[in-house]
Structure formats: C-alpha cells, structure tokens
Length: 503
Figure 1 (cartoon, rainbow, N blue to C red):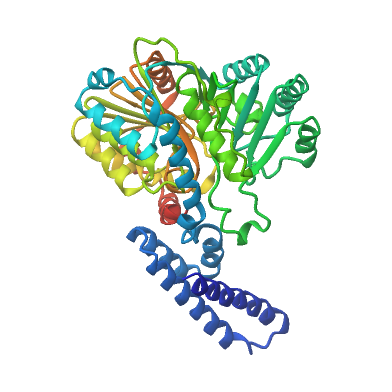
Figure 2 (cartoon, rainbow, N blue to C red; figure 1 turned 120 degrees about the vertical axis):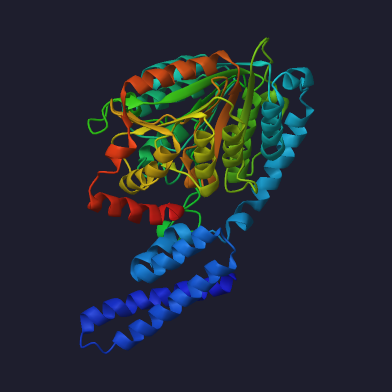
C-alpha cells in the first residue's frame, strides 16, 4: 500500500513538471503526456483511497474532488488526504498512553454510590467515557469557569507566579506579542528561581513563533519542545495531525484547560476580530492528575523522557460534596474517536435540552443526525456560532448545515458582539463539556484534543448563565429568512460543504 501511494504521488509530481514544461516549451507536444500522467495519477490515488475503507462520504468526496479539480485535488490530497499512516504513526503512542492511564488512574478509588446517583443515562455515558478515554470521573475536584481573556489570563498569571516545584504548559498557538512576552518573562523568572518549567507548542499552530522567543527560554533553562515538527509541510504526512490542546499544570495541584491560546487576539486586542468571546476552566484537586498525565505522555512521545513519578502525580483530592469532573483526551492515536463518541452519547442522553457553542461547526453524519433527532423529539436544541468568519471555507461549510437543522427544530444563533470561540456543550443544564474540541471533523478525527466533562458542578451552572447571556448578544436565524439568501451564496456553501470531510 505504501509503495502504491508513493508511485501515485511520484506520477502526480511528474504531471506537475510536465504541466510547467508545456508552458515554457510550448507547441502542445506534451499535451498527450499530460493527459496520460494525470489519468494514471488520479486512478492510482483513487484506488488507494478506495482500498483504505474510509467512510463512504469521505471516499466519494475525494473521488469527486479529483474528477472536478484534478490539480487542486492533488495538492489537497498531499495536505489533507494521507490518513492511511495515521494508525501506524500513532499506534505506539496510543498503547503507551493507555498503559500509563490504566496503571495510574486505574488505581483511583471510584465512588460507585456517587455514580449510581446520576441516573441510568448518565451512568452509561460516564462509563463509556472511562472505557474509551481511560480516565475515571473524580468527585474530589473543584473547578472554576473563566469567562473571556481578561479573567483567564489574569488568573493564569496569578497561579503561575505561585509555582514552587514545576510548571507544565502545552499550547496550539503561542504568539510573540504582549501577552506572549508577559508569560515568557514570568516563566523565565520562575526558572531562575529553581522551578522546573516544561513548555510544548504545536509546530504548525505556532509556525510564526520566532526563534529568539524559543532561544530566550532555552537559555534560561526552560525545556521547550515543538510537537510534530515538519520540514516540508505540504509533503509531510504529520502536517494534518496537530496538537490542538491547551493545558497548564502547576505543581500538580492546579490545572487549566479550555479554548484560549496564548495571543493578544484572545484578549480582544486584534482590530480585525474585536471582542473575543471565549471560555477557559481552572481545575484543582484529583482531576489535575489526569491533565498532568496527558501532558506527560505528550512530552514522552516527543522527547522519550518519562516523568511518571509521585513527584508529578501526587495531586491531592479536594473535599467536594457535589459534582463530578472527568478529563478526556482525544486524538488520531485513539481507535474510538473518543470525544466525538462522548459528545454523541451526551446528545443522545438528553431529556430536556442540548445547548452547543462552537466556532467551527462541521459535524459528521452521526452528530448531525443526533442533533436533528433530538430536536424532532422535542428536546430544546440550541446552536451558538459566530456571525462573522475567521476561516472562510469552514464558515460557509457550517452554514450549509443550518437549513436541515432549522427545519428539524434546532434553534441557531449567530453571536454578533465580536468573535465567538467558546467550545461548550450543556445537556439538561446539569451536564457539560468544556475544552479544546470544536464540533467538527478535524477535532473528532485529526487533532489531539482535551475536554473536561462536568456533572452537577457549580461550573456547570456558570456555563448555563454565560450561555443565556451570550444568546442576548446574538441574532437568531429563522428558516424562512435564511432560505432567502441568494443563489450564489448557496452555491458557495454547497461547494465548501463538499470539501468539509477533507477539512
């Protein structure tokens, strides 16, 4: 299979060379070669995709793209299509992570009495999450919702300043701007004071991070690692699998997870985006150990250095009479698409309401049908999305799903007071998810993500309050008026949706 793909890519490369030779040399003498190489390339790559036994919609999408846009399809395949090596690439990481979680988290005492009080539907959901996510629910943790950038970064900086032993940070985007430099300077000062600082950033998400930013931290003794480095982005099969996680663990007792990366735009300082609506979560107690494990296993994968010792894994439980917290990591290394399946279980278990906020809404068929069935069953289903785009293709692809959702009874709201970047699901106003995962196929199948699942906590009620407040700053879409958008826009949305399985 691997050799077949290489032949296909080689032939496709020859096609590109011939194409330009034909332009420069002229005369049309290469036209027949052009046609032959193009045909062979597409047949071979199409045959490989067919043998990979992807979901039918993905297979058909690729074949349509190759047929309609041969040259564009070739480059799209190089960038997005080569998922055939995903399992092999991350198989070792999957087994090592699972082994570590079962060894460390499997020893945690689980309150069956607390779990049995959840009700039958909730019990099934949490047991599903534990089985495929390898992390049990904790009833000895506390959480606090951090609304928007000012509260999030002020709290993070305050807690970082208290660090005595270690600071572990893992981010998708890190920028060399005002907040980025403030965090860098604080980390350097803590490293000088003897605190062990380890910092991981995604090589593609932080592509523009200058070398001097990294060098400054390394020179002060901070261990800094790029996740998934790529030398030639468009020809590297790792390019498509990114670490989208945002994790901070301080002294093993305080953790952070949520939607905000490190950059001034997340504080509303970008003129283009304006106000940035986002949500983060601070965690204390037992559940911090799960976040720590996720970070340490990512670190081990990139450095081959393991720190699975009591020095880093002795999070102290917190007396907490009500509410459960469960940390779930998802990624291309997981065989069960864990976060997507837990989301599906949440939606299917709803008895009264399902409220979703997501900046990027491109559901796969399972989630799409689950939302429609829930709305048709009388469940109060609401979807909150941005009114203005930051990713043009994703934005228009998202809107192509709205007519079917509106017809089924889903209420769709467009946030108009800036850019809405929160990633929230709230079910029956008592069970919620907050984290890094969007409601899209990239988060479900390609990115490394992490979400906190909350049951009957004070944070759940804060998320409910914030969601209701967000709706007052949003415009509700209605089927009759939405269907009046002009034909050109509909064609654009349909074209973007055609590409959505590839995004």
